Length: 604
Image 1 (cartoon, rainbow, N blue to C red):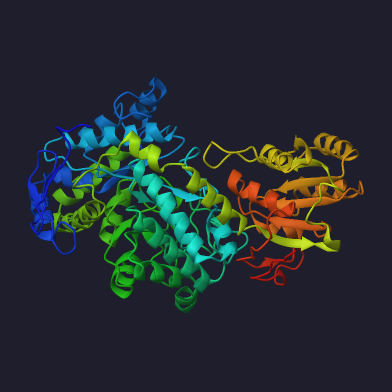
Image 2: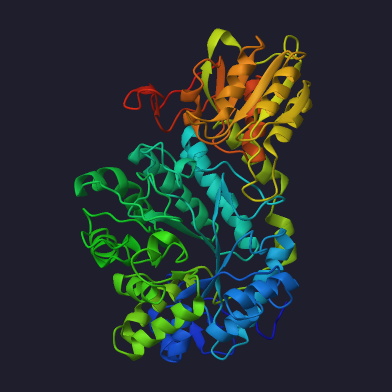
């Protein structure tokens, strides 16, 4: 396994271990902490060129399943967007300190391929003069945001875990999810979300949040941080100072959070405080404006009062601060792509994530140092934090992974069973008029499954209607499946109504139903057939408010297989519903009135 480039570890009992990195200097490991001490890390930094220092601050996307031999379409995309052919060329040209994996960049086909890609990236980086290992990251929140799919283990997302209410389950999901990422060479996960979702209209956070109660969210965040980090993966709580109360998606606009400082301290701060107390390795910034915390009109990502004044000084955090993606509209509204990375560093950021044009961002930082706007000492401060994290994660000792390690850890039966058990404890029974549920095979053997089929979060699960149908069949029901989509047409609705005539019950998967949604028409027309209708909210639990005539309604909080199968076991009585709403559901026609409060959840 690349032994010529592999970092070497020589240790004798009671003596400090010595690490030689990529032909670079030998580093002694601190005996008491197991962490490479700052003196030696500073020695590493002192040998870097200015260009290498600038590179160390960037975390960049790159297309392709391989570090050196990606498909031609990925080579073309890399040349167009980054001016390099592959990950190895990206590292040679810019000396980036981190790389982020995405499904759409074709980085995450399967676990063995991911491990090989990770090894290829490390080999390319360690082959450079004074080469350092790369910190590889991804967004593996589970639930509706997952970059690595089957056969890796997929867990319920944050709001589902919030509904389960078990910190032990949250920690277990983090520990197992983290162990699987680490086995594939990913050592930084941009999870857990620490935003408190107090706004049902939030288009970007929603079920990615553990809930609406700051203290409950804080407990779940701390549990997940401990879980991930016990597996040797850096957790990243996001999006500081809190993205929960917004109706604007910062990918496409510039959200403004109108909380007063007191409201921020009460609503948004507790989960971040809990993450810091739990020893969080990294915190991600939000591209949002919070006038009460910084009246300048700058996004938090570029705000020194927020990142240095509040996060560093008031909350006492000295770990790595990473920006949210610099390609998002929220951070590009006010300044050009050349100013954003410089202002982020001046604000107190350590890692610059995924700029739209790396050459523009990289050169802007370089020129800011050469021109005196940024000092080299300021860069050194951030590089030291990044190197401390790399050392803590064991990258300076051995950055490589093995295929055998993947087979031992990723998607093994005990992990998949744990995910199933945890998912069962999250399904929430919102409505059960007249005791329609659990459905019995004796009285409701034939079931028509209709509903929305949103694309799989990881590209490897679903479609939801098929998963629900297969799960019912497995439990002895006779299921017919008809995908009706998120906006069913009149013809589709008529087809569903006709199909409902000959069955004992209908199961409909609803997806973010609004007052104007034709999903409402579909459900109401199915109800008019007189057949028993069971609805399952496969994303936001708020759907239930739009469909008040449904006699049985469950919430799954996501449409990944693990959550859908668990919901079917609950509706068939194979598992008891024990989940409780972690957010309030307001009345559709009177949004100031609560229909179902936090903690609502029926039992059999």
